[in-house]
Length: 245
Image 1 (cartoon, rainbow, N blue to C red):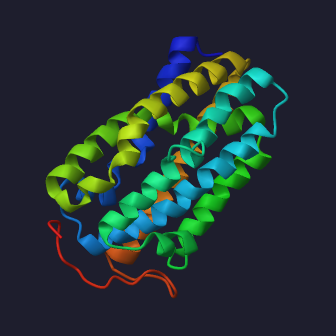
Image 2 (spheres, rainbow, N blue to C red; image 1 turned 180 degrees about the horizontal axis):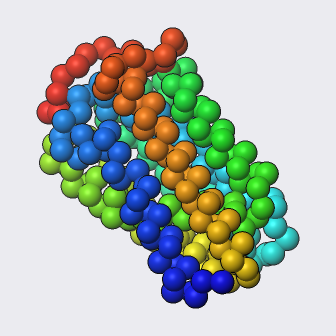
């Protein structure tokens, strides 16, 4: 087995190599080079992913009889669904959709979602539902890297796309939520990986999750950047104005 410190370092090495902070679509976003229409497509497709996160977490919860784990993990569902008095991440993402100029109803209907987005999100739900429970938990460890990306994204969106500023509540909330979730999941995975095979499976689960996130951005880039071929039935931009909207 790898030592605990080496095991943890391996997760960070995977993130450095494979996390979607390096995807060309995100690089264009952070440089202020996306059009309003491209940001609309991103917000719309990403909403589909956001809306399925509580379903993914519920699938993980149903697989364990450990009440301590369930108490810790169900926080994630509340964070995204809200508690009935305060909006959760899904509602906050709808605010972002509206800030781009699309209607919340358009996002909720999901009629313009790219086929690849649907396939990638469903693949994630199937992964956590069918693979071993430790692998399902380990797949969440992309949150180890999301804090820095979110902080960068907030600054970039405010700087380059000021018309989005009223829709950034989702990201400010995740600045604290994601590190808390990652800390719990990492400690759990480290504790329950009892063989080198367990450790390697945890690494593979994280790589697989990174692939799912990357594939969603590949689809966006292909459809709305280069060559610019959205699939039949997918969202069709109404205009192509650049960053300032």
